[in-house]
Image: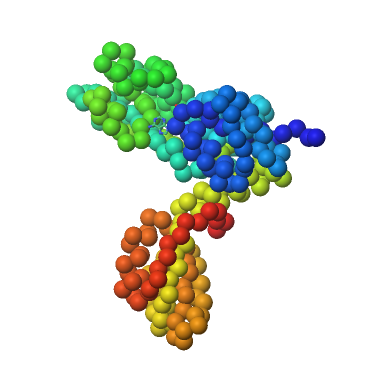
Length: 283
Ligand code: AMP
């Protein structure tokens, strides 16, 4: 039997559950035991390797795993050669520069000469160097927000999703250095065979999550108005019904648009409107 194709997935933390869910929705069947570090995926050549989120870029670059799921910020900080082959739409956060409330700095240029505490020293060092600004990084693994209060640094660069932790710690954001989300990475440039198949399946799930399938009945005379309301990628599907002068209209709508579109469809004469989730979609 040939070697398994390993997929490195986060063993704990914020990305653990959404990563497992994504793989399951992409059609992989696996059961993770309490302490298992790797498990086979039924009826496929894949094996899941459960490792720390921070170690994943390195393990993929070294060829220990062929694919991996981790944060874009982690990939940038690892500075190893891996390809990002899909953006996964969860684990969204921003790498933000912030100063204590009382500090006068208002822009990145004002941070020239500062000591900056950060969980991402490589990204921060590179970022300021590219801007021609000289700063000193103070690498910290956690509790970055307390560094100014301890006089360890004058500013911080840390990951935020809502920004409430920074605010709670008396910090004022001044700029975003990087927008991050979970990504699929690979060392297989050509994405051959099963790597290509899995990448396609994962992308299909991520695309489908942003869409809803909308079905309704309507008088034929209302079809033009309905087509004008639905901002779909293509013209809607129109199917004649047994009742003369009536049709069924099917289309795909962005999830965020549904609330705006439904009342208009009703006004245009649509009835029996159904909104359904889509499992997988290749646009
Ligand atoms: P973990 O420390 O294992 O929970 O995972 C950290 C990763 O989760 C980061 O590298 C980011 O890619 C992602 N993430 C998403 N939101 C946040 C957040 N608010 N703070 C830190 N990490 C976040």
